[in-house]
Every structure is written in C-alpha cells, then in structure tokens.
Image 1 (tube, rainbow, N blue to C red):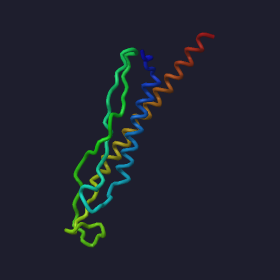
Image 2: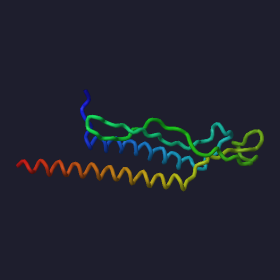
Image 3: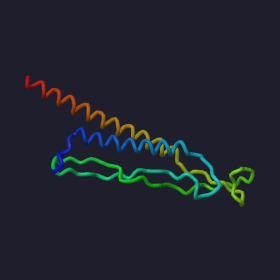
Image 4: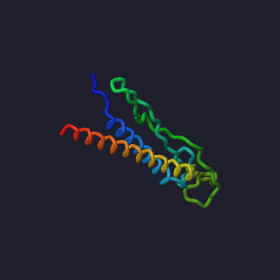
Length: 135
C-alpha cells in the first residue's frame, strides 16, 4: 500500500506541473513570428494537459501533466516570393502564436508556482512550530 501524500508532495507536484507550463509558454514566445516554407512545418503553439490525481489515503488532490498538445490557430500564410523560404507559390507560413495570450499565461503560471512555494513555506513553518511544542 502506498504511503499517503503529504502537503509537500502535493505542492511539489503542482510546482512541477507549473514548470512544464512555463517551459511550453516560453517555447511558444520564443517561436512567435517564426517562418517556414510549409504549413506542416510551421511552429504550433504547445499547451500542457493537466490531470487531477486524488489520494484516497490522505484525502488530498494534486495535479500532474498528462501530455503536451498542439493548440491554437493555423499558421498564417503570407505571400512573399522574395523570401528564400517561400514555397513554389511564393508563400511563407508564420507561427500563429498569440503573444499577449502567452504573456498572460506566463504571469498566471508564475503566480500559481509562487502560491505553491508559499504553501510549502507555510507547511514547513507549521511543522517546525509543532516540533517546538514538544520541547
């Protein structure tokens, strides 16, 4: 039988999930405006898919990253026959990354991560204070 999850494990797993979310958002921002010669090879926005995990032994829930999927708009086709990446019709394809949405997502991710750090710090301080009672 598995040991029940502690609040440290719950917050740690949530922080790991937010780190994946931050990395995918950073990748999306880094590839914003990228161009290629075909719609198939154009960068597509990535998003993590989260799954809630419930631990019956402790009654606590946490989150895990189930997968990372491509999402968002189709690449933008731009007619630019002088571009060396242009296809036979003179089109290039730009990654359709909504930079404003990605920045908002990054801020939300940073707040969620920070909240979990605060949970861990509070739990640590409560544990220390409880141990001090036994002296």
